[in-house]
Picture 1 (cartoon, rainbow, N blue to C red):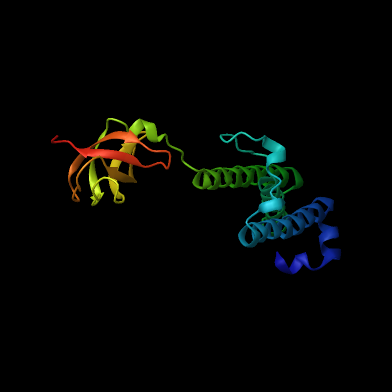
Picture 2 (spheres, rainbow, N blue to C red; picture 1 turned 180 degrees about the vertical axis):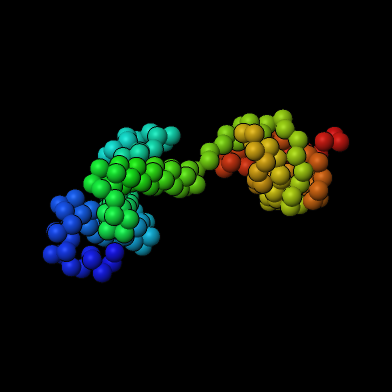
Length: 195
């Protein structure tokens, strides 16, 4: 197949659809690689045009993002060429197989984009949900007013290690404590549960 790609007269003799597949494969692959390189080296940044297709919702992802459309063209072009040149299929079966494969690759690219965006999302929490919860001292907490340590406590339904200060004496590591207050700097005030 690759030998035929560089011989345009042979491609044209195979039919117009073969030329279209070759153009889709070449242009789609080129722009797909440029897009991937831009995301890898520039972090997307100003080149991220996906929001034009699916809005600004944090939970939405676009099946018709730029990357998924490029994946469709690239996959459909290569599969169409394989069907026509390697497998000697007719125009109609080749078109159906190429379109189906392109659609599958478009969905795969969309799914990967969605999963990547979920990984990049900040998982927010409300420190106030820790009030009244018991936890364990992770890093010793100095006496009141002399510094902070760390506690492992459930915040917004997830175990987190957060900064904590004592309401009295020093609290050693591994002591069970109860959160009795919160501060503006996202830290908590604790006391041992035995009090």
